Image (tube, helix red, strand yellow):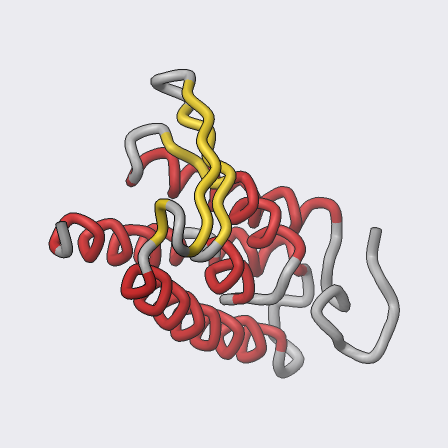
Length: 142
């Protein structure tokens, strides 16, 4: 599933890299949020550019809590406040920008990491930082 094109959002997708990105996203969310995983965020993390899913996922959430076996749907104004949206989308954009820069740096030069799958294995754990800071803000603002 390697797409061809001029370097757009989907230019570097492979089935492996999408799977790795979605896996890290689901694991990070599940661990930090005590089993609650935003499916929209996971799909966004897999298929969209770095940071894009945070902007979408912070205002539209379809959550599945795998520990409590609960499902919920929240959106901006109904379960998601404006301050929470602004903080999480800004945080996601900042993490996304820095992750994108690191990804580009890893690709450069003759010794660069050419495999998008390997780059995602290296970059994936950064999601724990993004979700961890978001969770800390959520707890602090209550």
